[in-house]
Length: 105
Image (cartoon, rainbow, N blue to C red):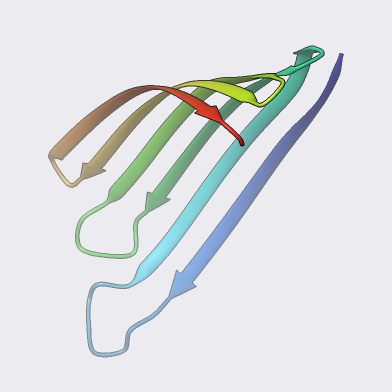
């Protein structure tokens, strides 16, 4: 079993002198991948961003899980992605499930 875990934190501050819409963003990221099978790769990622610099607080949270499997020239990929985006009192949720088959010639 081969794999890697990555944890990161970021912070961005931008002050616009003539506007109340500044940026004060804090972001977190956790990313993991592993090869449980000889030709397969498992991926998982979670991220969270929060911006409190403007007149409305904005948050963005994403979670992704995926699996890639390669058989000779054929690559199969499955991925599920969940996204929650909030600005003030408004919230948007997006869900995506994607299956892809690709053959290299």
